[in-house]
Each structure stands twice: as structure tokens, then as C-alpha cells.
Amino acid sequence: MSEGASKTSEAIADGFAVPSLTTESFIMLINDKIEKALAVLPDKPGVYLMHDVTGRVIYVGKAKNLNNRVHSYFRESGRHSAKVVALTSHVEDIETIMTDSEIEALILECNLIKKYRPRYNIMLKDDKTYPYLKISLQEDFPRMYITRRVVKDGAKYYGPYPDVGALRSTMKLLRSLFPVRNCRTMNPDRPCLQYHIKRCLAPCAGKVSREEYAGLVKSICLVLDGKTQELRRNLKQSMQEAAENYEFEQAARYRDQLQAVNRLEESQKAVLEGGDMDIVGYAADDFNVCLQVFFVRGGKLIGRKDFMLPAEGEEEADVIAAFIKQYYNGEDIFLPKEILVSRLPDDDDLLVLQQWLSDKAERKVSISTPQRGDKAKLMQLACENALKLIQEKERKGKMQKLTDEEAAEELQRIVGCDRPLARMDCFDISHNQGSETVSSMVVFRYGSPSKKDYRHFKLQSTEGKPDDFKSMQETVYRRYKEYEELPDLIIIDGGKGQLSAALKVIRGLGLDIQVISLAEKNEEIFLEGQSESIYLERESPALHVIQHIRDEAHRFAITYHRKRLRKKNLVSVLDNIAGIGPGRRKALWKAFASLEAMKAASVEELAAVDGMNRPAAEKVYEFFHSDIVKKNDMIGK
Image (cartoon, rainbow, N blue to C red; front, top):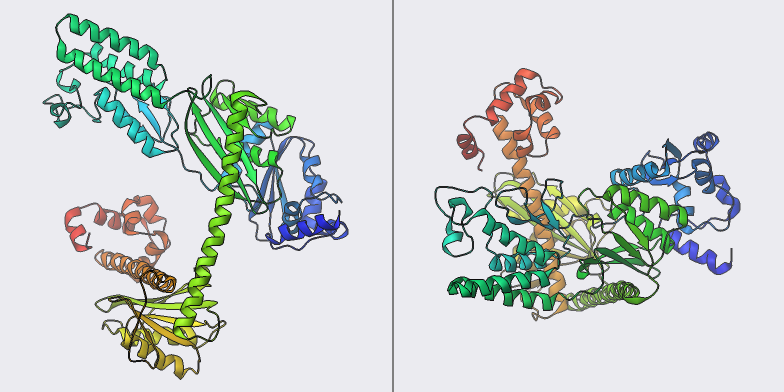
């Protein structure tokens, strides 16, 4: 390995908290467990799971030949990537699962990655399902609505739509053109308001025949299928027939629909000949990888979606293969006939992926790389968009860092601190008339939140009697009586009183730290030893950062306070159930995260809690499922 390559490997590997390893030290990573696992690897397809010292799965992979693939990680080679070096340095044991075929291995790999979310696998953070437009053709009078689940129920689905706002606009336009019902159940007694405002033809009350209603639904499907030319022809013919029969009002309605379809057709020009396809563009720099997906449906580009991943030294083809496996593994995901990618996986992986996708879609699905023509132009556009997103992220990150640092420097000058504000602690108090008094501490480093350093406190000195000054004193005393790291600035949420109370304790502990307070009413800053407060300009970066810290402390305190109140309410409710004492109350609270979860539990689930038995579980269940209104009033619902 060259000197430059060694440095690169070391820099990337540092992201995984592992030093750069030489070839000689690399082979020493094999322990007894790994050695035994390697000795019994089969020459068959399957899946391998790598575990760390805690037993957690940190990598899942598939192989056509488990013996060859897993051994390749531990052979002496100077060509191992930094990610492989980092991975193997944490492997303590290897588990394998044999399958009958490579397709089965791929399916199992996808499911295990979804289950364990291993640290060293490429992971898509955006795993939400996209919305579809559903036409319930299995019903006598179909309706049109948005869903995120695709099931084989005889309905027709259009999508997916990456932009739900655009989908709602499309549906609104279609409903204005073709007034189909939107109610879940039809009331035969009388038409609803939608009929009276001419947004529905009231099939529930027999105001429209099944044939006429079916024509509306067919028109909607023609629009969504992109067959607007056929629809225009049908509407024009219907308009002429209505005019000839002197049904001018009906003819005018057909005319308006025809004009609207013409406008819709102009805004949805086809970008490609053919049907449905996804175009996956790729771009990367030293820190990020971006995959930009263009969704083409019926030859029209209906939307796009981007996926941002950390750069981990993976090859482009490997990233794309991992993306395909994760993205198309969802139950409700739409599988187009063609997936275009910027770089194809190797031949074996490509064949397996195409077979898996085809089996999943129950029709042929191909993966290819366009070389020329409109498809190649769209692929280039997708890659350019991906690169632009990476550059924009880098630019915004630099700007945000610069803004935060400038704000911290300005605040340092204003409060007269003699050292940079590398760390700032902010405190806030929250209670309900003295009940369940809590406090919070949030930490900002160089103007940005450091959530791993956040702390909250359940206060004892003022329980039952509201006293913000005493509460603040208890909080700062508990924080600073023993400490590992001191801040450069302490911020107290409140006015002069809270500042004086906190200073009394902080100075009593012998700490020489700058302390200020921020009063919310007029956004004024109070400094130690100064009677006059400081007002900052509304556009001041220093004011923005101090407001951000204060608001974050307030949010963190309120969240903890509400959690304490919910727990208290739960205990007080259980006090009303005979046979449920302190031990069982504690066990029930530990077993169920919320009152709603406990109410939803069955008798068997309640009886399974430590310390509970079936008679006690039945009493709890009966309590939650009888006289609901009375109990809801009691627990403040």
C-alpha cells in the first residue's frame, strides 16, 4: 500500500474509532471464536452475521460461497478498505446461516439488515413508505383516496408519489373534474353536503346510475394512465352529443372537463417513451454519498427523492447494490419494470438482484445502465442533482458552523468573558404549583447543542412549595459540587433573583466562572455586579444563540416535567384498584411505558408482569374497561 493510501485509510478508519493497521497486525485480529468459526464454514450459499464483544450484530452479508467470502475478510491483503479494517477489528464472533440458493440468501440478508440495523452495513435513514393514489375498483361505486399500503384487493394503485403535496393537488383537480364520492360508507337515507355543493353525484341516494358513475371512474384512470388523448376524444364526443340533445348544461360540464384535461396534458409532457422506471443517480465526495432517485411513471417524471449517506470507502457499485436491496425490500414499495443505475453491480450480484426483484414483482424487472439517448441524459441529470446536494450540504454546514462560532464570539465580547465560549451550560426550572419540581441543564459547544451532555434533576428541597430561587440553588449545587468538566459560561433562565440565587452557590463552591441570566419577558441580559440589564438588537447573532440555549433548556425541562406528571397520574390511578400495592404498581409501571399501553393490555399480558397473578390482572383490566367516562375524569383525561 502506498504512503498516500495508508494515510487515507487511517483517516477514514478513524471514523470507526480504529487505528490504521498494517498487514502484519491485521492477521492478529483473529481470536479463538473466529478461528473456530472459520474452520467449519461450508462451501454453500448463505448469510453471515458478525458480532462484537457485546454480542451485538455489527455486519450482515450474503455469499454464494460462505467459506470463500468470510475467509476473504481475514486473509493477509494490502487491498482491504479502511471499512473492512475497522469492521474486523471489532469482530469477536461469526455466525452463519446456510440457504438453498443465493436468492434465498439475498432475501434473508435484507430481512436481517432490517431487523438488526448493523453499524457497518450501508443504511438508508429514510425508510418511510410513499403515498399512492388508490381507486377502489372492487366497490360498486369506487372512491379515490390516498394510502400508503398496497394490497391485492382488486383496487388500482397509482404512484408512489414522493411529494404528498403534489398528490393532494392532483387528487383535488381530479375531484373537481370528476365528482366521485369520498365517503367511506354510503348513507342511503339522504345525500351529504358534498352532493349539495356539486362535489359528488350522490350514488348513495341513487342520484346517478352505475354506468354513468363508471364513466367518471374510467376518465380518472385514463388521466392517471397518461391516456389523455383517448379521454379528450371521449369528452369531445360526449359534449357534442349533449349539445345535439339540447342538454346545454351537461355539454358545458363536458367542455370544462375537456379544457381542464388540455391544461393538465400540457403540464405533464412525457419525458421518456415507455412505462415506469426509477433512475438512480450517484455522487460522492470524501465525506458524503448521495443517491438521487427520479421516479418516472407512464413516461412522465413525477418526482424525485434523495438519500444521503456517510462516505465509508465503499465502491459505487456496492453502494448502489446495497441501496437496491434495502429500498425495494419494503412490502408496499412499488417496483417499476426498469431500474436505471449509474454503475452496475458485478455480474453475479446483478443476476441475483434482478431475479429477486422479478420474483417480488411477479414480472420481469431489469437493472441497466443507459449509454445514450434520453435515458442517459436523465441519468446524467440525476447524478448532477446528487452532486449539487452534496455541495449544498457542505456549504450549509460551513455557513452554520461559521454563524455559530461568530455568535459565540459576539456573546463572549458582550458578557466580558476572557476566554472563548467553548462550552455553555444553561439551567431552567419547571413545576406545577410546586408539584413534581424538576430542572434541566443543556450544553452548547461553540454555539451548537451537545445533547449527550444534557442532564435533568428531580428536585427535593422545594417539593410541594414553589420556590424558583431555592430550586435553582439546589440544581447548580448538585451540578457543580463534583464535576469532570466546567463550562466557560453559565446561563440562568430568569431575572436578577434567579441570577443572585445561583451566584450564591456557585461562588460558595469557589468557582470562578462567568454567570449571566436571560429574562424572557423583555429578552434582557443580567450580568453579575451590574444593576442595569443589557438589551441586544433583534438581529444580533449573540441574542439568537442565547435564545436558542434558553428555549432548549425550557423544552428539555418541560418534557421531563410532563413525564413525571404522567408517571404520578398512573400511580394515583392504580391506587384505586384493590389488591394493587406499591410493589405491583412499580412492576406495572416498569412493564408498560404509558397509561394507554396499560389500558390496551390483555388480561394475559397483565398477569405476565412480575408480582402479578390472574385475579389481580383481571381487577386491573376490569378497572380500565368499565365506566370509562368516570375514570377519564378521575385521571384528568
